[in-house]
Length: 216
Image (tube, rainbow, N blue to C red):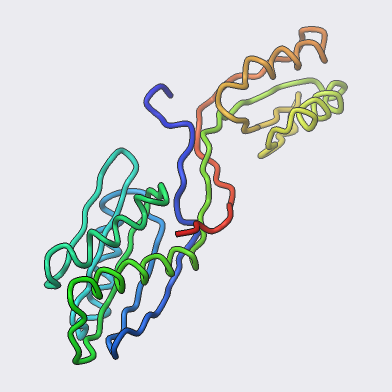
């Protein structure tokens, strides 16, 4: 886990927004993605759906430092990069954004384009909302039936997530808890069971919790 960040923020879902500026229509969509390949697939899908548009500008940020953007024929620096900056400012990763423009016949100028593309991306992000993903360790805890009530109470008091319970000859509880807290939990389990019960870490994963929409 040493190369994994403790937490990150990403879109909570898909968000769409429409902005009209001097008869040009900007249709923005923000999507959560988990890889550069999935971002490219989403961009290709949206571009294919909007072949008749004047421009399909896009950007994405993937955890690990991957950032890409395209002005798709708009003047350099007026579309993709301003969109990207919206997500940089919000600390958003694993995000893909496409803004489709249908030209309305009036030139907006460089400043007008920057505002339109960044505003459209920001509004779509507000619609999507954000979630904070925290690294959790997955743990398996096996105990006898007569200790189950005591162990469940200890877990609930500690605030862990019980994902599943398997009832066989003994009981196995599958839990998730924030990274770095397993040693302390095992001490509590040992105290509660006179040393009979300890948990075994079986892996780790990120678990998201929706947060307030980003203010841009």
